Length: 231
Image (tube, rainbow, N blue to C red):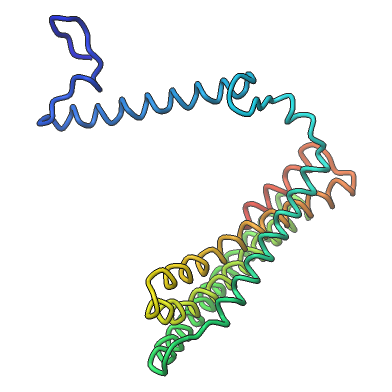
């Protein structure tokens, strides 16, 4: 605050344009005010007085089986979207002969890079695999292996689409900027949707298997942590 003849004035209302510290303080003050507004909104929603009247008690009444099923279905939908979008992008025109030559060179370089990267990661991953098996148990170790495997699959599929969408994006941009941006955006969503879909699917299915085997408590949480660590 800054003291004046009319009393203390908030910094966000008493900044000098030429003072850098005052400008920084004004930004911080505005951010705090926005955070306070968000906290007040969430409090109203939690109490049932905000928009939608969402209550925590209503969320607690949802069946865990329903949430688990919804998680698995969401993962399947995300993977299906990634597959369909990837096929649609690969079916687009890849341009003239020169564009195809450049795209092919990029693909060769990307493939060599990915093979080298995965080879290096596999050595390190195998050491961590043995480390987890020694200090924990097979369930945690399998979760780590599953997460690492699916992460690799998502990365390979994403690279496969990305390096092949370059020429198709350029060719689409020759027709219109809007079409080029659309192809580029859709190609970028493939990796994201595959990562999210495989994560939800693996967590949902592995959790279901562990529950089916009668595993509870900490022994149920540790394998899922191993899965996330592997991913």
